[in-house]
Length: 264
Image (cartoon, rainbow, N blue to C red; front, side, top):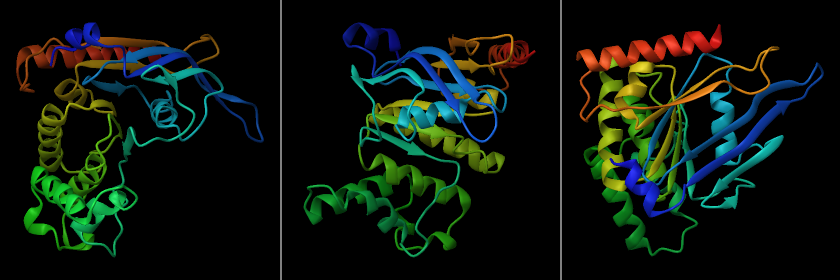
C-alpha cells in the first residue's frame, strides 16, 4: 500500500500532539508518556514495539478513548477524541467472547444497537463468517473451537462494525507459532480488502516487520529524559514478506538493536 499517496489525498486519520500521561496513586506520580507526536494516515498499518513499561498499551487505550491524556491532544480526522467511539475499535490479547453465545451470535453482538434490519445484520454476520473462514463453525460455542479460531471470532466481531481505525493490543501473543502466522496472513488479507487504518502493539519485532508500513519504536521515560524516545521507521520491503530472506532479517536485527539502544 502506498501511504504517501494517501497523505496527499487527505489528512491523517489519527494525530497525536504533545501527548503525555501520568498515573497518580498512593505513591509518587508515574509518567508513562511524555511529549509524544505522530500521525497515522488512511489505510496505514503501524506497529508499535518497545520493551515492557514503555507505554505501548497505555497509548492504545488513549487512542481508543478509554482513558484521558494528562496533556496534549489526540485527534480523529481533525476532531478531539474525548472518549470511545464506533469509528475506533479495539482487539485485545484475550478474546473476551461470550461463552454462552455461538460463533455467529458473538460476531453479531455489536450490531444489536445498529439501525439495520434483521436481514442486513444477518448478511453482515455471514459475510464476516466467510471472511475469517468460520462459516462451518457458526453454531459452535467458544469452548468448542481452538484458540486461533476464537481470535478469528474476536477479529470478525470488531470488523463487522466497520470501524475506520482498528487498535490491536498484542492480539496474537497467546497463540502458537503456526496459529500466529495464520492470523497474521488473515489480518493482512482483511486489511487489504477493508482498508482500515491499523495501530498494532507487539513485542515481536519479526511480527512488526511482517505486518506494518511503519514501525514506531518506543522507549521508556527515565530520570534523564523528558520525552519518550521514539523512532518511526518505514518498512521498504514488498509484500508478501518472507522472514528468512536476508533483507527481512537485516531489518529485524536493526530494529532489535534500536529497541536496545533507546532502552540503555
